[in-house]
Image 1 (cartoon, one colour):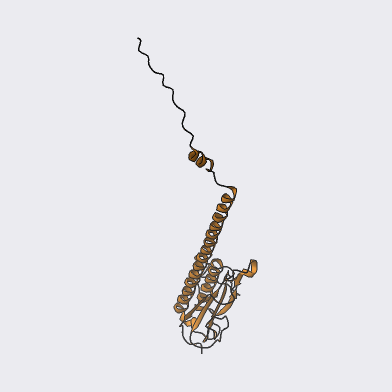
Image 2 (image 1 turned 120 degrees about the vertical axis):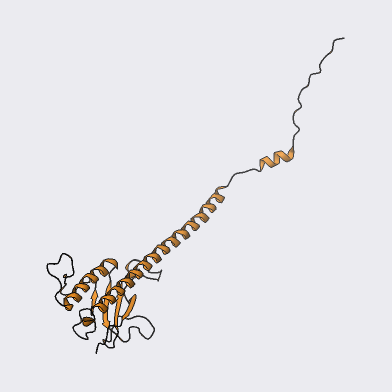
Amino acid sequence: MPYSVPLLIPSRPKFSPLLTTHNAFQHGFSLVEVLVSIFVLTIGLLGMVGMQAASLQSNREARLQSSAVTLARELADMVRGNKSEGIKATSNPYVGSFTSPLTLATPAYCLNVAAASACATTVDVANAEMTEWLARVDSELPSARVAVCFDSTPFDASGLPQWGCTNTGSVMVIKIGWTRGSTNRGQAGSAGLDRASVPGVVVPVTAGSAT
């Protein structure tokens, strides 16, 4: 009797209700979920942009403050170096109130390397120093304002610096202000600028007596 090989027919997989149900409930992200994700991401990005803008403004103000302090110290050194003029109670070439553009009534350039003649007197030296110094203040600080005077009360009763001078005492005071961004975030445009309402830098210089 011949040997016969049984024919093996693969059986169909049994129906699995659990597997079918599981696959039926597999979905992607819904439109609502995508919109919520985008909204949350946008809020986070706006917060980062706001922080970056505040950081840039703070860095700018710090740079201007540092420049103003450096300029005030430079003028203080000039006054000390030309003390014969710096201690004068009247006709003091270093004393005055200046607003942008910062210039003397009669500028002097005898300290310039290209000057036709050198400074002849200490008054000429003081005028030339102020001419050059005011030009640098005007170029480094936006809408700068400067007051140099003898002042016994450079601060008001609240402890805030003030532009007014008593023109008394033995201490010369260098006051510098400039236009800066207002701390009131509710203001916009020109209203959001503090146009040197108070001095940003007050540097005393003991140059002698004003009386």
